Amino acid sequence: MKLIFVSDSKNNVILEGESYHYLIVKGVRANKNKKFVCAFDGELSRVQNGKRYTIADLLVRYIQVNGPFYLDPNTTPRSQHPQKRIEEILYSLYYQKPVIQGLKIKIANRKGIGFSSYNFMSADEAKLLQHNVVIELTKRNIRSDDMGTHVHTNGTFCLDSTNRIVGTCAGMFFYTDYATGLFDLLQKIGVWTVTKGALKAVVGKAKVPFATIVWAYRHGLIPDNVKAEKAILAAHKYFTTMELEVDHLTENKSNNCLYALALVHGNINTSLGDRRNSIKEPFFFYTAYRHDVSKLLVKCGFDQDNQHYERRFFFDLTRKGEEEYRKCFNEFKKKAEAAGYLTKEPEKDNLLSYWADPCRPGKENNPLAKLPTELLASFYKYSNGAFNDMPEI
Image (cartoon, rainbow, N blue to C red; front, side, top):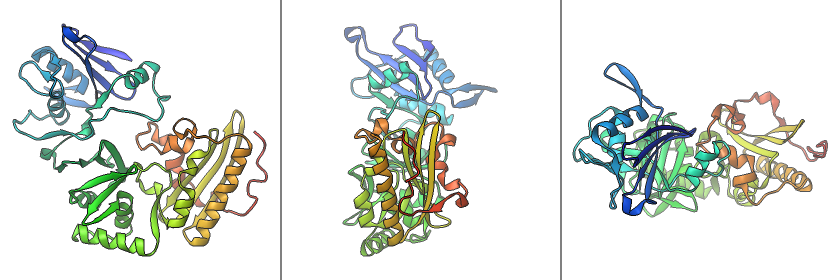
């Protein structure tokens, strides 16, 4: 990592990493080991006095003028003069606004940053994240009513830098693709909860999955300009009556993007469970849903040294199509198992788990997200024995 700034007191240090910029606020002399680490959007640029500066540049200037931040035992670090919390300062820098007295500013997720894999970043940045509680103070994680986002007691909905909808609840993030009506709808729901890793809206006595709301809205079951709770409950009741569930095709419940969701019968969802995460690298089994043709698309195979094997299939979302999809996966899984490539640690060894992370850098190279954009003519109907030609690995 690159050292950007050290205050005269050496209590404030700013570093540049590959994923974030970091501000380290060290404790007073009586407790030298105590420190606060925050991650912020240092590379965002802002124009000030006719010149363009990064957020890191502006934060350095703030510290030089107002003195370093110090640890406050009751809250996040404060500046010496004038006394303001670090999230208030970063908020003002992100939006080029003066700090408004009495404005409610909330850190949506106060839990430390964690990744399923740290292989995509440098060793020293990974060490900083793994051995410290690093609070995310990025633009997406500092919210206020001033920017038109309702700050609920249990989380927020906002837009990130790529214009995706981001929901926060219980210290967790949940993502989906942006639509104006959907964003407005989600902000009308005041109570959210997280159950078994899935975000759910509390509507009356029902807990309706975020994925269900996204799917129902995108398929016209929740029209714009209707009473939100009534429409959501009607869609939820319809799915339940028809024994349908919205399946997280990636097994990552934070990823509610369109390609990662499909409406399936509950038995197929239950039978597959999280088994799709059991395939060990270099084997891969990717599934995505293509909404314009209402088909599941599968790309599976392995990449090992100079050996590449790949098969592509499409499936209709009917009971017959779902059963064929399950047979396809089970046949492929047997091949991977015979080769010794199953895992009980998907966060380390499973390519689906790796690419399903909605915060994964390098989205343009993500084979899972790109799957719905592939030519439909390159996918074929599955039949038993489709992997009989798979070479040994």
